[in-house]
Image (cartoon, rainbow, N blue to C red):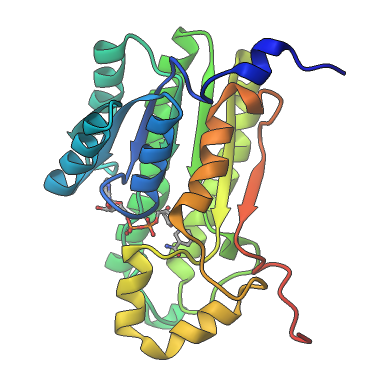
Length: 267
Ligand SMILES: NC(=O)c1ccc[n+]([C@@H]2O[C@H](COP(=O)([O-])OP(=O)(O)OC[C@H]3O[C@@H](n4cnc5c(N)ncnc54)[C@H](O)[C@@H]3O)[C@@H](O)[C@H]2O)c1
């Protein structure tokens, strides 16, 4: 097997590509946007936080990248449809989307104490939001000859997480939706995969530790690597999956969790 000189010398992973990142105003979404821009992608960034979202886009433009921000609530079907239209109108095509936005993960407690409102908020953002992203982005990608969807889940879905039932159930749904989407569209040129992070140093987990300081060390100790991840470390597999370098990968989940699934009670 040989690699062509062109492949080896390819300047950037996402050169000439156009992508959308949801939940990009902070945390992992911001890191994905920054790395994707660094790898040459033109970007439409989406979040419900307008000011913070706009400043992420502005920071990318300042360093020579191309990014626009559009305030978008992923739970609203029409807003996600408009987001995809913006990418196509502005940049002529859509090659990839990362469905990353999260909300309601703060619904913390045993199942018998979760209320219906909390359940609905969590499932709406984490699962319905991803459905909307796929529903509108996939036809745009098909129109351009193909593309890549990367959904963000959590490695917790493979083992369950006490006190986070609604959140992990929603993420389990995203995993299933990823597999179903891959079954439907891989033959037509759209690859669909997910990335499952472990605990990461983001504003979301900082808020959680502020509320429950006693869980900080316990959370770190859940990772075989005995540390939390940096958002940039999870952005790497996302950007790779979005790129043509992952051309034979579909229906797959990259677990990027510092070893929570292989952590041993003996060590
Ligand atoms: N932080 C962790 O430890 C961790 C662990 C496993 C998985 N994840 C996953 O990683 C992803 C990013 O998490 P994070 O830690 O960066 O979260 P975060 O809370 O720091 O950022 C989430 C972003 O989503 C935006 N958002 C919320 N509701 C929205 C909506 N309705 N429409 C559009 N945007 C909305 C928020 O404004 C925010 O900017 C999520 O999918 C999360 O489930 C995070």
